[in-house]
Length: 353
Image (tube, rainbow, N blue to C red; front, side):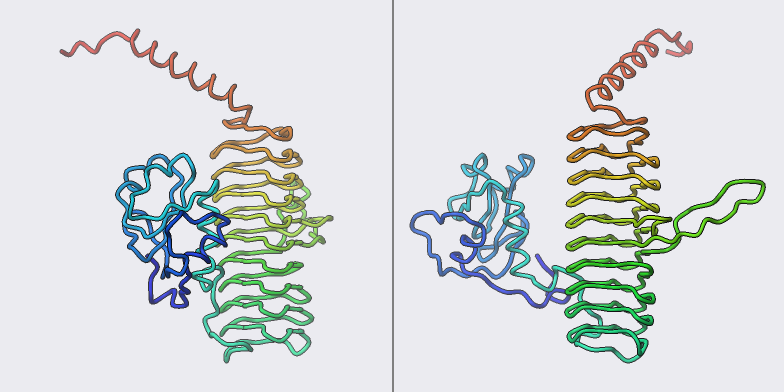
């Protein structure tokens, strides 16, 4: 269940409101006016709480749940207890996420520490910065000359917004972040500690390495989310771009000139080298490494801990080091396992009983 200290703005919903928001039909003889006070896991949900289930390993928990209602896919609807209202939908998790956002609006994005519109004591906003009405600036934040910030945006404690940075409306810029040389769209969430717009790693190699000035920007489109302690370098001569709706986890490194398409998923620990392009809807699993100047095609998925060293065609599923189509990768793993097993059987004994 949610913590009543940290998430205090809980909103109850009627069963009818839940069904309408989830796009499901209510079973016969249910009361659409019944109120639900929150959401909880299957194992702990009570009669006034909503749960969801879409994974076979939780079948026993579903059968034993005490939830008042449960969002469930058609294949598991028969396991819902008689006392629980089955809300059958093709995508229970997505429906649950939308309802949870309505029940806990204060959990959708990080909240301001100061808790009120305006500039908090201890923050510094340059006289030539332009803030629309409704911007919140927490203590210790610094906003540079010429910066522009849209209404509804929260700038967290000790964040540093560089000169001429543009940040759109309804954004959340986490505490201890830095943004320089960046253009940020609307409804963007940047979690604490992220570093955006610093130099890319560019040097003309020689007896002494000559620094190459990085004169590009970082462009972050609408509805992007960037995890804690992620770094996004500005472009060397062209922009580093993060496409609309892309979600980036914690501790990701995105180098200069990288272009990431729309609605990509990049999981923690990923490193993307310079001038690589990810087309729309690409998924990179945790700790994937991508060398520079490559193109990963639209809709491709790369398995966690893989290393990509060549272009990936659209719609591919690759894995391994170096990465290759998953069928070839699985064949290699199976062959190696068999060879290792055979070698173990052929080794002479150690003379011990």
